[in-house]
Image (cartoon, rainbow, N blue to C red; front, side, top):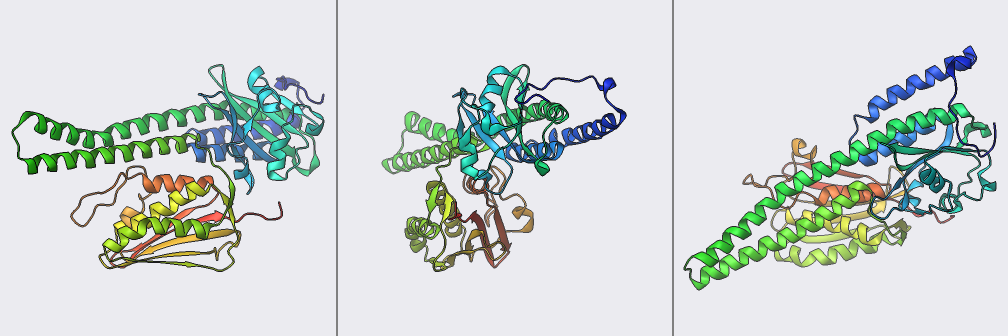
Length: 417
């Protein structure tokens, strides 16, 4: 094998029977994986499945996907294996001084035996993960002749060396993965646009109707003020919905950027509670915060985490019973001490199991006591994606007539890094 060589196709008939059997088994696995990938239309989940499959097929220590931003032309890490992989998310990789950039520009695969001796190796990615790339395979993700990204496998397990069979297998996998990625992107784009148009129609119809009444009929001053207040309310609702749509679109497509820093999560919680407290006081609802002492910091985007807490606490107040209570608890997760858990509990009427199953879906809203849904139905979906981007999870526990508890976890900052 030649170090730092492009991957070349092979003649299957010229291979030894043993090598043929081994390759057939691995290609059968690719076919099986491809069927599964083509059925997944949620982009973050799809990318995770692809990198896990790539690592399995090449028997490598790690794998990653980089995608080209269609607007800026920049190359970003979008998915990577490993518990600290979120450190790489949204890292911009240069086109001119990186192996992945070379693959995108030339549309060819590379098999590199010693990455540390290759001038194109992007050392920042290793630094972010405290990881040493020894060898790697990088293959283009291409659809209809256009390279949309790069699929990489890093470090053959057992300190072995990648060979051309590994490279050709990964290249075959990448051709299937690229189509699946494009399908997921198109589905999410079309699905979101359709849902957006449907949801925007209601406030726009109300604004148009009340504007017509203001212009075309003789009304009293009291009615005029009432109509103007309705128009203002619907306009504010429209603005809020539009902002949420844009936020959701960025998150769903992977274009949202997280500014990662050391964050005092207890402080973030208290700030969110302070914002909501006047609303709670007006309804006689008590809010209390219980935070463990000496909580370690988390690593994340403080503004985004504030957005998550604010959404959960606002919902706890909005859907609570009059004169009820909200309790926000911040502790080290008792199931995994590498995470902080934030739990928001209320004394509202609770949520049925049927509705719990759909809570985090876009545009889903739990009907109120009169059977009407409130809000835009986007807040929890956005909150879930933000938490997942941080490497955590969101859960709900609710009982009708008792109340609900929404919780999320965030990884603790590793101080030894």
